[in-house]
Length: 277
Image (cartoon, rainbow, N blue to C red; front, side):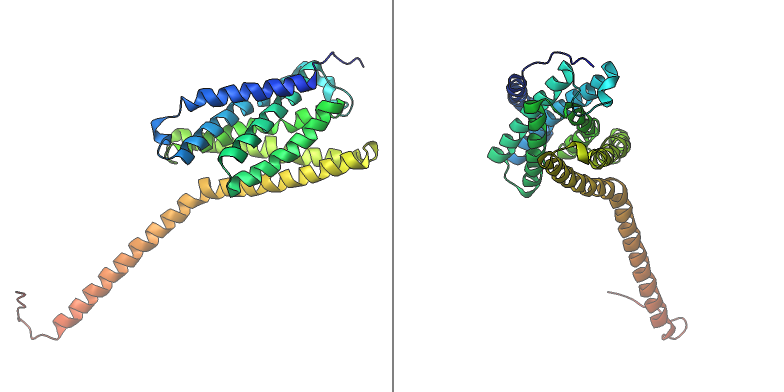
């Protein structure tokens, strides 16, 4: 099987870094008024918008790689195309940019979790870029970016205060859950299975790196899935339940007060009028 000529990896890594740095500066000028209440809110909107650009490009690009060259799936270790190698290299440039953006401007707990994720991705993808091995496997990993499109849109909605009852929010929530199961959980599960099956074809270092990276990303994905489900589908019911309980409690209090008043009235002689000054 012939291998299509590929571009130099480091050049595309640098190109990806410059590309997303440029988008970072451009989107700073496009922050909506609803996301300008605090510096942190503005940074989150800008950072999420840049991530959305990356997810849209790489999610579509990864699917296109397999559409254009289906044989890429027959050998995820040695086979690659120029386009697939460019994609993985380009994506490494984004993750380097995003890691530095969080490290310099948003050192919070949530950012540290993502920074751990980015280190795993940069290490695994960097191996593919440098050795030109496992490029197909890395492209499969980028399938998860299809789901990230809707995750980032959801986050932008939350940052700008879009009501969760609005149709566009509900539609995105459904698409988010559907793509989460198909393009994230199922893909990561398949990647884990592939890694176990091809254990004998991998060196100990590569197998360890892949196993640890997948384990961390899988745990983070499951936690994220539960958080999204609770926030978008059970919290509303919980609030409604609380409102119902409060309403029932008020009615019970009114009933008790009415009963007390009735009891007090029975202690008065018939025909007695009560005047409250």
